[in-house]
Amino acid sequence: MVSVFMDPAGDRSLPRPGLMALAGRTLGGIPPTFQVLIGIFSVQVGAALAKQLFSVTGAAGTVTLRLFFAAVVLLLVWRPSLKISRRALPVVLSYGLVLGVMNLCFYQAIARIPLGIAVTIEFLGPLTVALAGSRRWLDALWALLAAGGVVLLTESRGELSMAGMLFALAAGICWGSYILLGAALGNRTTEGNGLALGMAVAALVAMPVGAVETGTGLLAPWVLMIGLAVALLSSVIPYSLELEALRRIPPRVFGVLMSLEPAVGALAGLIVLGEMLHTTQWLAVGLVVAASVGATRTATTRK
Image (cartoon, rainbow, N blue to C red; front, side):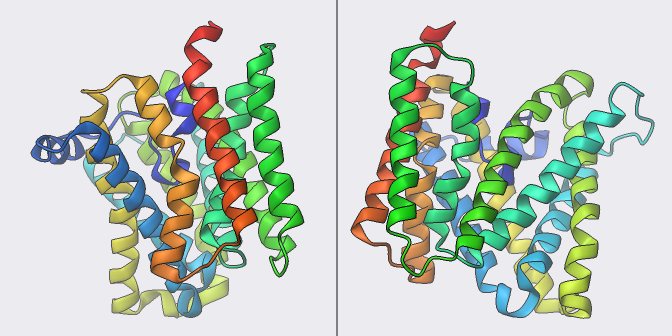
């Protein structure tokens, strides 16, 4: 269940490289709940920082930078063999394709609507996976809460871009697919090799779009530095912190904490980008968070 609420942009559903685990142990003195919260804030601050690049590199260019640096780091850490079995190859390619499209859609969403609203809508993807197939009336309540949040966002959207909301929804659909593919990837590849190769595929998916949108502007030294910072904030720091936290707290508690992601996204948008949300929009975020927490807490009893 925990993997359902892990952020795909951070690729948190697969094993962590030893280098990242070492970084996590260095921070072992921090209480595990705070480690998870710091990781969540790091991901959302990374997204907010990425959004500030949009005026120079565009949304697709920023995605290209992030996925490129993430792929470079993972390939250097894992050094996977390019000899992939026929059984694993379709999963690696599908995983990378979905990961690339998901990030492209999410960054197109936050280019048009506030970060908190985009994260909230995108979070419906893993929530749907969590509730799929359940026949419990309590899970129907969580689904209704999430649906209520979406209705509030729609009714109170005011100047919100419908295209931005649709991009966020597309990112959420990709997130749900990513969860299912991530499980298959873990079964058909070893350690982080599949993740590294999948990330490389995702970078290749984004590069043509980013190159067309931004061109040689992607190669400016200061742009590359910020792109690297975004990759570190969105990947390396959360990997280290969450790996250490998962050694010390139950997965159910971790899942509940991860359910706070939409609210943290809204706060990051407010503090870093000055994106104000209306009262009804905050209520909508709260409903989705409540649905996520409820679905996570009751997941273990559905088996």
